[in-house]
Image (cartoon, rainbow, N blue to C red):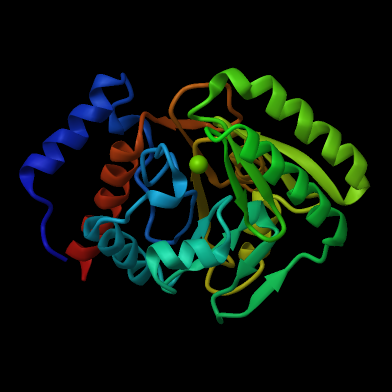
Length: 269
Ligand SMILES: [Mg+2]
């Protein structure tokens, strides 16, 4: 692995220190760690348009290094679909998409939560009409999840929330509302990021490892609660109430922390 440019390292250390969370406040991870990582707002700064984010080579290389150093025990745990995760990162990692509704295990097998999709199609039609009426809204159809982003139109927050709440009510018990940063989603109930991580932890190569989960948003609280229950390491990125036991200020600090693990493992080999 190429050494990180000193300038980047300095920038990341400063980013962590500026926000009042020196990296020393998160634990040094042992060699037997299993990594569960949210993407947007955790490995990447949140983008104005989620479909336009790009993965830099540094990040791809860092994640591959950690995956290899941990015997493959690295999974991306996202609200994005697995297809979207693969578009960004290549088909290189274990992944859970759509907030746990779908998952690709270490053997490459896909697991999909079964939900009736007929009702969701109707909801999609209604949301398409709403997005057409308000061009600042961005509608994302992920298959089992429908997300309406209002980052460019924060004044529509209440309208978006109320519309999705009513649609979820009509859909019945199979779906529920998930709020996030400038986004509201309709997602299948019964699955979340915590259930997805628990499923990984029951399988090789994650079984028996000390799990760490890093995330930044409300949907990640399910993962933090699981970490706290099983004695893993829960890390919240940024501010806000959280069940997580540790904090990092931003994506730069997350990468610096992960890099520290990668470099230590490299020195051993
Ligand atoms: Mg996130």
